[in-house]
Length: 326
Image (cartoon, rainbow, N blue to C red; front, side):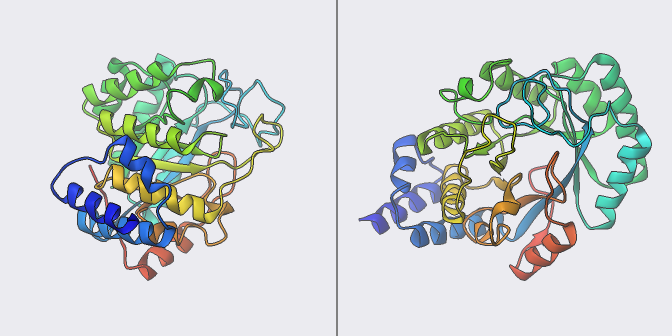
């Protein structure tokens, strides 16, 4: 019965039809090995052996006005944020881009704390992006909060190619994650970035207390928005945050989520992101279960996995570092 479901859904996808919510929920009960094998088959068919690897830099850290319950940078909690500083200057941002490029990384994302950058900060970072694009060949992605279309147009003109804004969870569950901005504000941010001609990257965090249905609903919202880069963060329960006692996802739970996400958006870059270091195998099994992208190096406030280690892993698994979806 379960194998018949997998074959039916694979055929549906091959016919360019979409898996719906009810079908995705059924995948939560399919034997794991059968599910992940089918997801990896879909990945090979729709994405080949391309692996989209990026690094991030914490371009502005701490003192965040938002109350996202998972985050050490929020000013609302007692978490020990490693440091706090304003927007980094061009020299710092360029150094990070050069280091990523030298390691073979093709994307470099500048991420800042706070609800949004000010117009002055946007102008400052636009100049930095111009220098990065002039001095390197790396693609620049930005995660600057809830900006407006005009600000995104400035960033695109400066040379940015992609905007990141995580949905974090489903619309139903989001009010339990953050109360200082809304789900609709996030959606409008992504739509504004698209109108400005930028590609968009949006996923969420697994392990916040949400259900599998919430995870599926989050990906369905991303699909409706045309998202092709899906960060899959695994909650790292940080002391001092409201989620400090949450149980991290197991490797098998992460594999199942990656596989279901692949069925929902077959041609997406399913990108393992924060929390990957908590997995015993550092994500290897997920990269054989539908996931085909990663954020490498350190995260915003937690340690990550070195680019060198990741490059060796993706080569071993038969992947090739490649830009996917612009």
